[in-house]
Length: 153
Ligand code: FES
Image 1 (tube, rainbow, N blue to C red):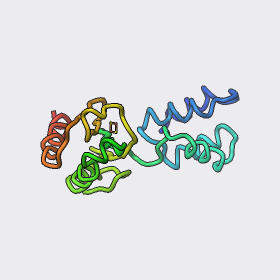
Image 2 (cartoon, rainbow, N blue to C red; image 1 turned 120 degrees about the vertical axis):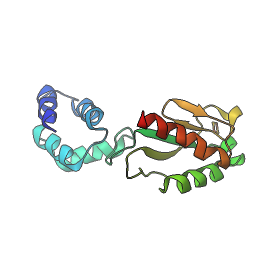
Image 3 (cartoon, helix red, strand yellow; image 1 turned 180 degrees about the horizontal axis):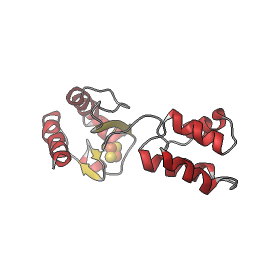
Image 4 (spheres, rainbow, N blue to C red; image 1 turned 135 degrees about the vertical axis):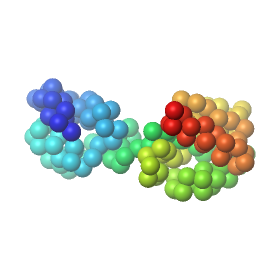
C-alpha cells in the first residue's frame, strides 16, 4: 500500500485526476480497499463520500477482492433461451459462490453479463479472455479444472 502515496503525489492537484488515480490504484491491488479509498480521499482533499460515489458510478471499479480468473456468464437472450441459467447454476454449485462473488481462495470471480457477441455459440461464458461456447452443465467441471491447473503451474 505504500505505493499509493506515490500515486497520490502523481495526481495531486490535477484536474480530473481522481479517475485515473483510482484506476492505477486498482491495477496495483486488483481492487480498491476501504483503506485505499480513505488514503486517496485524504490525499486528494476530497470527501470519502465523493470518492465512493465515483467508484460506485463507474462499473470498472471493484471494492472487493477479485479472483485471478474472471468468469462472465452470458445472460443475453440467445444464451438464456439455450439454458444459460442452468450453466450459471452449475458454476455456482461448482465454485460454492453466488453470481457477483469471489471464491475464498481468490481463484475465481463469477459475474453475469448481457450479450457478449458470440450468440451463435450460445450458451456462452468467458473466462478471462477466452470464450467458451455451446456449454452444457456437464462441461463446466472440466473447463474450470483447466484454469485451476493453470494456477498451479
Ligand atoms: S446472448 Fe449470449 S452471446 Fe449473445
